Length: 205
Image (cartoon, rainbow, N blue to C red; front, side, top):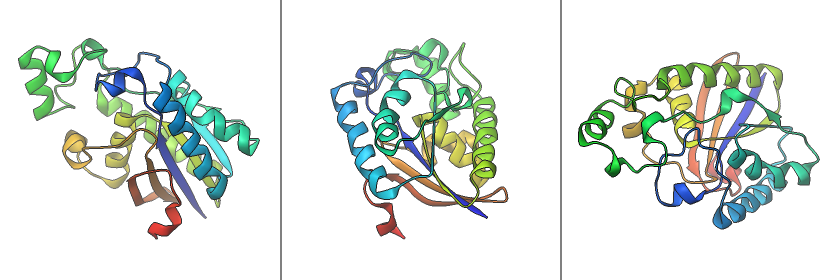
Protein backbone atom coordinates (compact mmCIF):
# COMPACT_ATOMS: atom_id res chain seq x y z
CA UNK A 1 0.00 0.00 0.00
CA UNK A 2 1.08 3.52 -0.75
CA UNK A 3 1.89 6.13 1.90
CA UNK A 4 1.85 9.84 1.04
CA UNK A 5 4.39 11.70 3.15
CA UNK A 6 4.39 15.50 3.07
CA UNK A 7 7.45 17.11 4.62
CA UNK A 8 7.15 20.73 5.69
CA UNK A 9 10.06 22.92 6.62
CA UNK A 10 9.48 24.71 9.93
CA UNK A 11 8.53 28.39 10.07
CA UNK A 12 11.06 31.19 9.95
CA UNK A 13 13.35 32.05 12.86
CA UNK A 14 15.39 35.20 13.47
CA UNK A 15 18.53 33.48 12.21
CA UNK A 16 16.85 32.12 9.09
CA UNK A 17 15.68 35.62 8.24
CA UNK A 18 19.36 36.64 8.22
CA UNK A 19 20.36 33.45 6.36
CA UNK A 20 22.48 32.24 9.27
CA UNK A 21 23.19 28.55 9.77
CA UNK A 22 20.96 27.36 12.60
CA UNK A 23 21.42 23.60 12.65
CA UNK A 24 21.57 22.32 16.22
CA UNK A 25 20.85 25.74 17.77
CA UNK A 26 17.36 25.49 19.29
CA UNK A 27 15.74 28.80 18.33
CA UNK A 28 12.00 29.63 18.36
CA UNK A 29 10.14 30.75 15.29
CA UNK A 30 9.69 34.50 14.88
CA UNK A 31 6.51 36.49 14.13
CA UNK A 32 6.66 35.57 10.46
CA UNK A 33 7.22 31.94 11.44
CA UNK A 34 4.09 32.05 13.61
CA UNK A 35 2.05 33.21 10.63
CA UNK A 36 3.60 30.47 8.50
CA UNK A 37 2.63 27.88 11.12
CA UNK A 38 -0.95 29.14 10.86
CA UNK A 39 -0.81 28.84 7.07
CA UNK A 40 0.35 25.24 7.47
CA UNK A 41 -2.57 24.61 9.83
CA UNK A 42 -5.03 26.03 7.29
CA UNK A 43 -3.56 23.79 4.60
CA UNK A 44 -3.71 20.75 6.88
CA UNK A 45 -7.37 21.43 7.69
CA UNK A 46 -8.12 20.76 4.03
CA UNK A 47 -5.55 18.03 3.44
CA UNK A 48 -6.47 16.13 6.64
CA UNK A 49 -3.34 14.08 7.33
CA UNK A 50 -3.85 10.88 9.31
CA UNK A 51 -0.69 11.26 11.39
CA UNK A 52 1.85 13.90 12.37
CA UNK A 53 5.60 13.53 12.92
CA UNK A 54 8.12 16.24 13.78
CA UNK A 55 11.63 17.03 14.78
CA UNK A 56 11.88 17.61 18.54
CA UNK A 57 13.61 20.95 17.96
CA UNK A 58 11.66 23.95 19.23
CA UNK A 59 11.10 25.59 15.84
CA UNK A 60 9.61 22.39 14.43
CA UNK A 61 7.39 21.78 17.47
CA UNK A 62 6.10 25.34 17.38
CA UNK A 63 5.34 24.99 13.67
CA UNK A 64 3.34 21.78 14.01
CA UNK A 65 1.47 22.69 17.22
CA UNK A 66 -1.40 24.68 15.59
CA UNK A 67 -2.01 21.80 13.17
CA UNK A 68 -1.92 19.23 15.95
CA UNK A 69 -4.40 21.21 18.05
CA UNK A 70 -6.75 21.67 15.11
CA UNK A 71 -6.75 17.99 14.13
CA UNK A 72 -6.62 16.58 17.64
CA UNK A 73 -3.50 14.58 16.80
CA UNK A 74 -0.37 14.12 18.91
CA UNK A 75 2.80 14.46 16.84
CA UNK A 76 5.41 11.74 17.09
CA UNK A 77 8.67 13.52 17.91
CA UNK A 78 11.74 11.72 16.61
CA UNK A 79 15.33 12.90 17.09
CA UNK A 80 16.28 11.46 13.70
CA UNK A 81 14.31 14.36 12.18
CA UNK A 82 16.50 17.03 13.80
CA UNK A 83 18.51 19.39 11.61
CA UNK A 84 22.11 18.76 10.63
CA UNK A 85 24.63 20.17 13.13
CA UNK A 86 26.69 22.79 11.28
CA UNK A 87 29.56 22.89 13.78
CA UNK A 88 31.75 25.98 13.40
CA UNK A 89 29.18 27.58 11.06
CA UNK A 90 26.39 27.70 13.67
CA UNK A 91 25.05 31.25 13.93
CA UNK A 92 27.12 32.48 11.00
CA UNK A 93 26.46 33.39 7.39
CA UNK A 94 28.53 31.72 4.71
CA UNK A 95 30.27 35.04 4.05
CA UNK A 96 31.42 35.20 7.69
CA UNK A 97 33.33 31.92 7.55
CA UNK A 98 37.02 31.65 6.66
CA UNK A 99 37.19 31.91 2.86
CA UNK A 100 38.86 28.52 2.45
CA UNK A 101 36.13 26.83 4.53
CA UNK A 102 33.31 28.52 2.65
CA UNK A 103 34.80 27.78 -0.77
CA UNK A 104 35.41 24.10 0.03
CA UNK A 105 31.86 23.75 1.36
CA UNK A 106 30.36 25.30 -1.75
CA UNK A 107 32.36 22.93 -3.99
CA UNK A 108 31.46 19.79 -2.01
CA UNK A 109 29.21 20.29 1.05
CA UNK A 110 29.41 16.60 2.00
CA UNK A 111 33.12 15.86 1.71
CA UNK A 112 34.03 19.30 3.07
CA UNK A 113 31.21 19.88 5.52
CA UNK A 114 31.72 22.50 8.20
CA UNK A 115 34.43 21.70 10.80
CA UNK A 116 32.98 20.20 13.96
CA UNK A 117 29.65 19.56 12.27
CA UNK A 118 27.71 16.43 11.44
CA UNK A 119 28.60 14.41 8.36
CA UNK A 120 25.71 15.07 5.94
CA UNK A 121 25.89 11.46 4.74
CA UNK A 122 25.22 10.28 8.31
CA UNK A 123 22.31 12.73 8.55
CA UNK A 124 20.91 11.37 5.28
CA UNK A 125 21.14 7.82 6.67
CA UNK A 126 19.26 8.65 9.86
CA UNK A 127 16.48 10.56 8.11
CA UNK A 128 16.08 7.81 5.49
CA UNK A 129 15.70 5.33 8.33
CA UNK A 130 12.86 7.23 9.99
CA UNK A 131 11.29 8.02 6.61
CA UNK A 132 11.01 4.30 5.81
CA UNK A 133 9.63 3.67 9.29
CA UNK A 134 6.93 6.27 8.70
CA UNK A 135 6.07 4.69 5.36
CA UNK A 136 5.75 1.24 6.90
CA UNK A 137 3.75 2.32 9.95
CA UNK A 138 1.25 4.42 8.01
CA UNK A 139 0.61 2.39 4.88
CA UNK A 140 -2.40 3.69 2.98
CA UNK A 141 -2.38 6.96 4.95
CA UNK A 142 -1.29 10.58 4.58
CA UNK A 143 1.40 11.82 6.95
CA UNK A 144 2.64 15.35 7.64
CA UNK A 145 6.24 15.65 8.87
CA UNK A 146 7.73 18.96 10.06
CA UNK A 147 11.51 18.99 9.78
CA UNK A 148 14.36 21.13 8.47
CA UNK A 149 15.79 22.61 5.30
CA UNK A 150 19.08 20.76 4.84
CA UNK A 151 17.78 17.51 6.25
CA UNK A 152 14.81 17.44 3.86
CA UNK A 153 17.01 18.16 0.86
CA UNK A 154 19.42 15.40 1.86
CA UNK A 155 16.48 13.01 2.21
CA UNK A 156 15.15 13.86 -1.24
CA UNK A 157 18.56 13.19 -2.77
CA UNK A 158 18.92 9.92 -0.85
CA UNK A 159 15.52 8.47 -1.75
CA UNK A 160 15.78 9.51 -5.41
CA UNK A 161 19.30 8.13 -5.81
CA UNK A 162 20.89 11.54 -6.43
CA UNK A 163 24.43 12.40 -5.31
CA UNK A 164 24.32 13.91 -1.84
CA UNK A 165 27.23 16.16 -2.80
CA UNK A 166 24.88 17.92 -5.24
CA UNK A 167 22.05 18.66 -2.80
CA UNK A 168 22.70 22.42 -2.76
CA UNK A 169 22.93 22.61 -6.55
CA UNK A 170 20.01 20.31 -7.41
CA UNK A 171 17.71 21.58 -4.65
CA UNK A 172 18.82 25.17 -4.09
CA UNK A 173 15.77 26.44 -2.21
CA UNK A 174 13.20 25.24 0.30
CA UNK A 175 11.28 28.11 1.83
CA UNK A 176 10.06 28.28 5.44
CA UNK A 177 6.87 26.19 5.82
CA UNK A 178 7.23 25.02 2.20
CA UNK A 179 6.05 21.51 1.37
CA UNK A 180 7.62 18.46 -0.25
CA UNK A 181 5.33 15.58 -1.19
CA UNK A 182 6.74 12.07 -1.54
CA UNK A 183 5.03 8.79 -2.38
CA UNK A 184 6.34 5.73 -0.49
CA UNK A 185 5.39 2.21 -1.52
CA UNK A 186 7.31 -0.87 -0.35
CA UNK A 187 10.47 1.21 0.01
CA UNK A 188 10.17 2.74 -3.47
CA UNK A 189 9.87 6.51 -3.41
CA UNK A 190 8.54 9.02 -5.94
CA UNK A 191 8.67 12.81 -5.77
CA UNK A 192 5.32 14.48 -6.44
CA UNK A 193 6.03 18.10 -5.43
CA UNK A 194 8.90 20.19 -4.07
CA UNK A 195 9.13 23.64 -2.43
CA UNK A 196 5.40 24.32 -2.66
CA UNK A 197 3.70 26.92 -0.40
CA UNK A 198 1.15 25.41 2.02
CA UNK A 199 -1.83 25.54 -0.35
CA UNK A 200 -3.94 22.71 -1.77
CA UNK A 201 -1.37 20.38 -3.29
CA UNK A 202 -4.01 18.32 -5.05
CA UNK A 203 -4.15 21.08 -7.67
CA UNK A 204 -0.61 20.11 -8.70
CA UNK A 205 -1.53 16.56 -9.68
